[in-house]
Amino acid sequence: MSRSTSRGLTLIELVVAMSIFAMVAVMGMQSLTGTLRLRDRLADTAEQTAGLGAATSLLRNDLSAAISLLFYPAEAERPRPSLDASGEGQGFALSLGGQPVMPDTGSDGLTAPRQRVEWYVEAETSRLIRQVWPTLYPVETRQVSQAAVIMEGVQGLELRSYWVGVGWVAGVRPENMPLPGPRDVAFDSDEGVALSEALSDPLPLALEVALVTRDLGRITLMETLR
Image 1 (tube, helix red, strand yellow):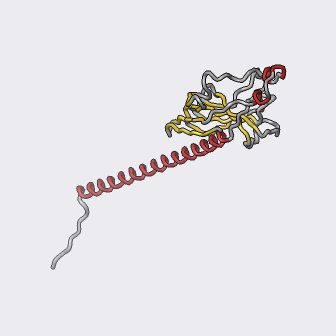
Image 2 (cartoon, rainbow, N blue to C red; image 1 turned 120 degrees about the horizontal axis):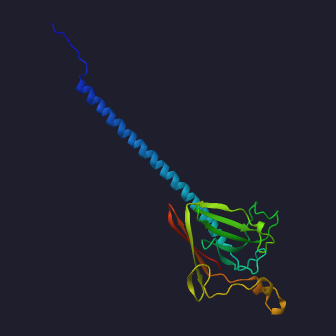
Image 3 (cartoon, rainbow, N blue to C red; image 1 turned 90 degrees about the vertical axis):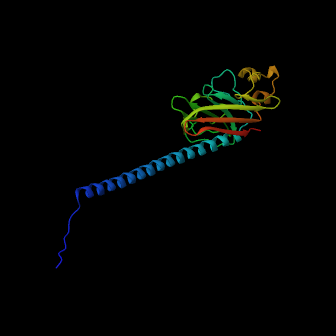
């Protein structure tokens, strides 16, 4: 008569089994960690892409609404060109026509069909900023809107403009192009200055705007202005 015997795991078998289990657990944790990191990177990229899309759409919309009219700042001795440098060279200002006015422009509800927009990069925070004047003839400096943050992670804004007979130049206008005259001379009828010359200012044929971003590299936009 045979007698069956049973025995448990030996110490070596138990160690081997625990080692295999630990290896499977580590590989599973590494796979899960990699998946979570990939998810976070994709979410960050999607957020950055969405912010870039909104910024470029708004920028293109402003460029397409450019008009060749001077801007007369409050308490300034002379008007500013329709396209002008802004933000200490890290941006530009542009006269617009037919654009909606944001509710909080500080204009007490007074709006005009023509406005002034300023785009610039805030170097300390790497933010792309947009501000709007609700009129080309503000009477007070407080009429400008609050600074709206359009995009984060923008380290620079570079401009090139294309002028007929000149070609592409760095900045908003050729160096030899004169700036508008003083405000009182422009409107002095004794000088024989035509009203169109006192109010209008030439625009380049096209403008190239390059956003230098921290995470997405260099983004270049080109738009015809007339």
